Image (cartoon, rainbow, N blue to C red; front, side, top):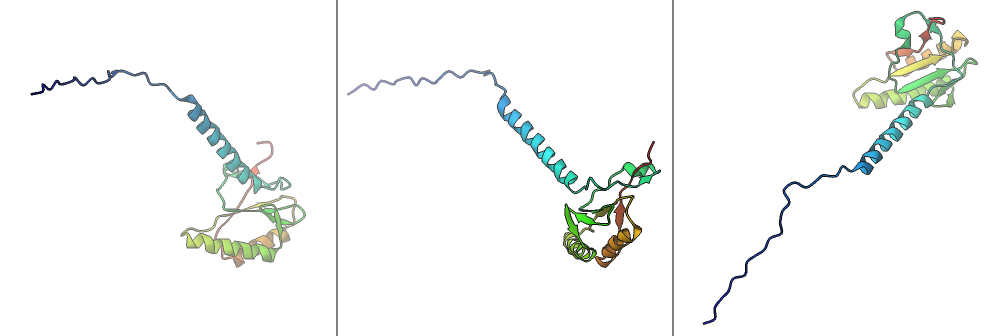
Length: 151
């Protein structure tokens, strides 16, 4: 009879404490991605503000508090109305606000509209914007202001 010899199975030696290397490159990538994201997001918010509009002054400390808005309506000194940089007539503004209001209500929340009216404009132009908001069925309209000059 043939004699069977058993070979010993040799396992690789397991190192108990391997050193863990910190991967810096992926962490830098994520940080740069977040910086780019927040820069672009802030540009989108700033894009709705018309630099030609000088806001009226207000004594209240609440003047500096900015309410989040879904639509910012800018009323320029010459009476022109702009939303996202596009000039609108009072009729087209009412249509835009009505459509956005319906879209917001379908999501279960009211539309937030902020009016940035220039302090040098005529009241008749502001009244046209308020009439457009009323035609669109908006319950609340927020006006932007800055703190009183010299405060």
